[in-house]
Image 1: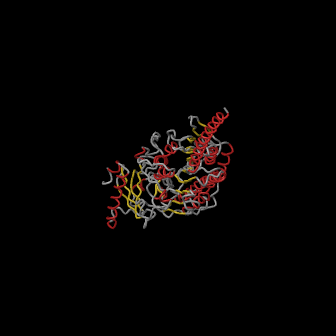
Image 2: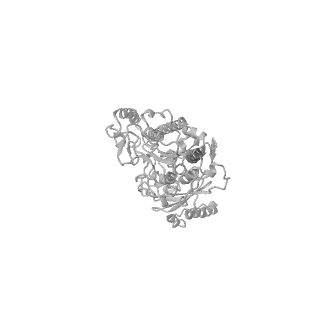
Image 3: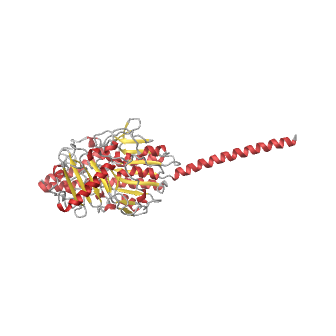
Length: 523
């Protein structure tokens, strides 16, 4: 009987050992999966609105108002030739999400409602276990899809005391300045993420969009500077039909009241200012009314008034940019404090560039450099060398496939961009990357009266085909004419180069399946 009990006890011990080993193995597998999840990089995209390279120190600006963005650049890589595919707010965001051109994702202009049912990079990340969120300016009209959490401003949103749309479609009005609020909401979301899983967050800022209303703490921050006029501020637009017909000049288009806050009656407030509380309003109008009173005393007209408008515009725009930079610094400090910097890919970009008086303009839309080029800075210390610069041609189209590639996912064939990881890893040598970028703008007739156009931009040349109301071509040699003042199309000396560029353009049109452009490329 005693031997029998020993035999039974041995069987029990053996079974318990097997169970222990099984549970230990399961525990190790769970831990391993958790570690792998933690190692997969987090992804943060900070996207501003109309924040142009000319206002950023990392791109050569001397205004000294972007220390935090400049620090981000020193800790990462500056993409010196980053371009958008369609220089206008909502379509640019649609390209970011889908990795597809406007004619493919269906969002060609600011008037269209974005089709959120289509594939977007965050949907793939979400399926792969990423926690996904978009906070701030959205501007795509339809409700976000593929995000575990979102909180967005309706339309353009407001600088002061803006509303936010919640996931249940309710609206919440939040007191304060929007750039500060958006950063607060972003860090609040980060506070509650599951630290064992990777996350993907888009922080969408309203700044520095028109009407350039600074935080009250930044009013007057740039008043000590007299800005030098761009050398082509008084551009005559000779030989450039679209430039002659635009409606985006500081002289004629910029409004004294709406844009520059020079109201004769402080009670005459549009929707932006009506949202202010008493303290905000008093501080705001105390500042602007003193400027208005001084302007009346000067009694300016002609060029003197135009140049006064330029100075006022620059001071408002850059003062608005100060808060943007400060809040990027706040977010970076949060990530550092919470040990999230090392394993997080951080992208800073804008939805496009913007004119700061070049050609006498504000706004964007054109395929010219200040509009088509956009800031793009990437920080990811395990992959990107500090303080480096990449001069290859990249596009906002490339970000979606880059994020999927970084997460170890297969990039869908329908995405038209290219992962830039080979560039970041320095696996691509000069001349092996992209030889030209393709651009297509659609919104005409529309605000600012910029004709529809498409074209190609190479490392040296730019060929543009305007169509619709008027049909013509433009050609620029960017090496000899970086300001894009001389249209060389039809110049006999550039006949061979024009033919070569047209062939390259046709190749890109075919590559990106732009049927509308294909029908016009030979005309």
